[in-house]
Length: 492
Image (tube, rainbow, N blue to C red; front, side, top):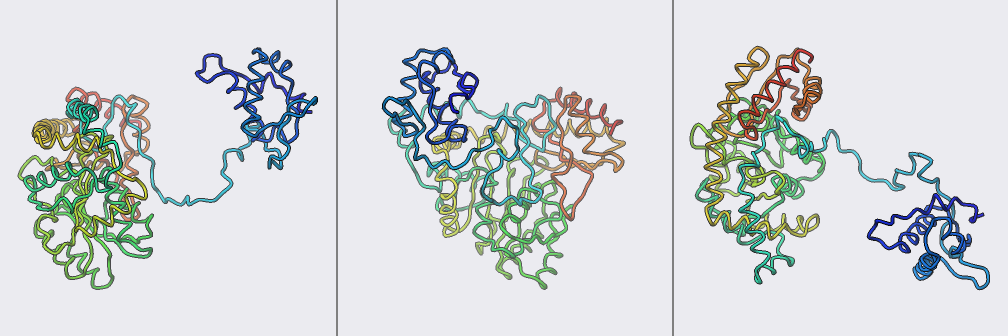
């Protein structure tokens, strides 16, 4: 009988909650009905009995029952009492969650679960000391200025318009600012109609892939490559054609030979500070790749995530800047140069391609954060972003030099590396005797987060190496981090 249920245990209210007591009681009874504990036509305990059991006023219980009746969960039968609505379509009791049955946590429908080796993002927000993958130091970013502009825009009368729906292409002011910035920083002359603002470079890669790839298509990528790009291509049904990468970037001569045997829909490259090895693609290979794209009619997805940080000489201009046949889809990131959590990136391509990418973007994300984009446009127009890049470039160059000196001084017997010309991390190969998974675990126990190398591995590339980010570490933090790493090595 329903009256015999342990209501004193089942109906527990929180007197400190902002939700009124009668609504809490109502919601508890709804849960008991929907999980099958109470069935259609089951009687509910009288208001007096329930009030005594759970220690609340009888009028509160009456209000809860009135709410249940008004919502259609219960009915009042004259001279009989309150009952669960008899016509509710509840056919069987479910095992209550308290039984611990794992079936309760499984959905009753099917969904796509084959994601290959896609790894979840590492959560670095609660980690005190880390040798990361090569991220900017968020402490250097003029976040206060950005937030000041954000607040200022939100307070202005005309700024309220930015809270309405807008175009999926992104803020026109930011696209104009980027148009000017790309022209003077890397010689990329374009129009605002050729620019799409994205939530970071990863969205750009995803959108380009959705437009380019049909299941079974081939995309040429490096033997070593950015794992999230590989995962995106595979998820779209593409087959990966691995092309060797040496000290001068992707081996375009090897690609040319493969193109004689098979067709590719696109070539994905990171010509400036290749991921993970940090090498820069030579200019002759860039020109040859552009010629091959024209000859074989494939797209070039150029991922230029950290162009702004090159230390030893002037960086090569992107392929997009010297592409006269509209084969390049150029993808960049503000997140990677400012702060990773502020998801702002951009894609530059032909106007038709950008319009199509904007249409797909609307299906997953109607638009970006217009206020944030507008605030960034102010920082570009006021010269704050240029100042930030100049300041950061000087600091990161010093940190690169110090970090490489420390690596050589403390770990020279177990690591091999070259100081990178640019970027925010060093590609470090460890002695094969060192188990990087074990090293990562031991270092973590000693207070240092460091990756285990698995993210860089694929079916063709299995180095015993790590990208070791220096940009986000001050000198004293480098000392602490490398001291812990060295301490952890003997046990790995």
